[in-house]
Each structure stands twice: as structure tokens, then as C-alpha cells.
Amino acid sequence: MNRYFSATKALIISIFYICITVECLAMKPSEFFHQLNSKNMHLVEEFYKADAVLVDPIGRIEGSSRIRAYYEHQYKNAQTIEWEIGTEFQSGNELSFPWVMILKAEGLNGGEAYRVDGMSRFVVEADGKVSFHQDYFDVGAFIYEKIPVMSHIVSYIKGRLKKGLNDFDAVSK
Image (cartoon, rainbow, N blue to C red; front, side, top):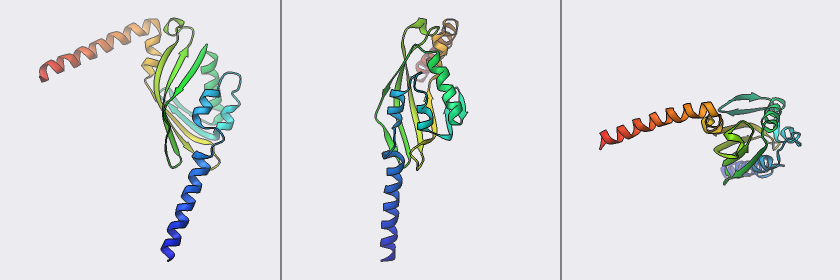
């Protein structure tokens, strides 16, 4: 009988914990990115904990004020940033989803909009704020391939790598 009540209590606590972390967020990550722009950077402090960590291929940023400065810099240099958010996946207090960022920035890709595919993972705390956020994306597709001089170098390297794969395919057949 005691085991039954202990298991039931643990289940209720687990359901409550999930509710107050992911399901009951004041703002879901997808909503945050759809709403974020250069005029409402105050959303960063509402979304992230003060000691939150953001990790992406460019670097690691600690603290919501530094994360805000990072976003301010990104949005200042962009003419437009739009997001296509895919299906959200949840496990406990973690949430992830694939995304496509459509970016238009002067000096990148000849000033034309381009798409970058990525994936984000978030850890949400009991207060409903994000404590950890990690982005996965191809930084080459994001930046290096969009700068005129760099794009030629990256294309050359990719061509050499593809040739190596083709040579490997020919040998392995």
C-alpha cells in the first residue's frame, strides 16, 4: 500500500513539474523567436533566467544581459530575420525543435534573403524561464558561404571534398 501511494505521489509531482516548466511557459520558445525584433529586446529577460547559457557554433554566452547584447547585435546588422519553426519535441523539462531562419543582411549573400536550417534545444526551469539554450546549425551556410571572397574558398573546398567522395564511391563499387 505504501509503495502505491509513493508511486502515485511521484507521478503527481512529475506531472506538476512538467506543467510548471514546459507546458505552462509564459512564452514558448517558438513564440519568443516569432516576436523578437530590434524594438522589443526586453523579451530576452522575460524568456531567459538571469544566469542562462546560450551555446551555438559561434560561441558560448552566459547571462541574460549578454544574451540580449548578442541578439541586439544580430538584429542590428540584419534587414530582416524571419523564422519557420518545425514540430516541437518535449521530454521532461527539455524542449527542442527544428527551424529555418530566413535572413537578409547587407554584405551577406549580395543583400538577398537566404535560408539557414538549424535545431534548438532548451532547458526550462520551474519558474518557466529558460536556463540553457543550444543551437545547432551550419555556420558555413550561415556566414562563410555568403561573404563574396569566402564563398569562393568554401565552394572550392566543398568541391574537393565531393570529388573525394566520388572517388571513394568509384573505388568501393
